[in-house]
Length: 170
Picture 1: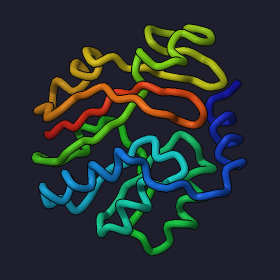
Picture 2: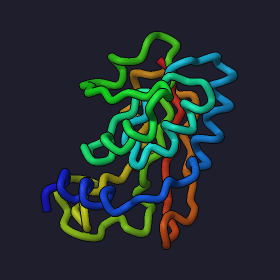
Picture 3: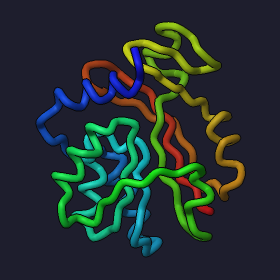
Picture 4: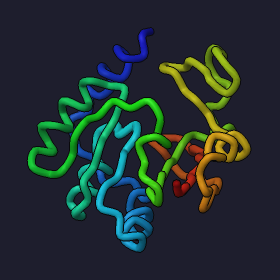
């Protein structure tokens, strides 16, 4: 199935706004401690974290693969300092001293290896899934001054999921 169609259909079916992710709540403390005013929310999904950050006074750039979710977010975010933007490189976008906060599925996740393998650590199982190891994440962030990378887990939807969380500074 085409990924854009999958995500547009998935987000079309979601009508209830979710609470912000606990990771977003923790990152708000770091954002405040560093006196940041703008953030980039990659893979913003239903926009719950983007709206949370905007409500806390930040200017938010929200990006997602799904056009449907961006349109919904634009309606829900009217007047909340959120905009959509296309980007090529995260590093290029961030200013010196800017921070990147990311939470991605880990190679230790229950869904890792399910479906059709299309690349190393990438599978099509209902939709495209990219899993990150701690080493892979460190390698991807080597241009940054990596502040912290850690493994976490918790219930996500109906199953236990494993994640890599990273905070990096340019």
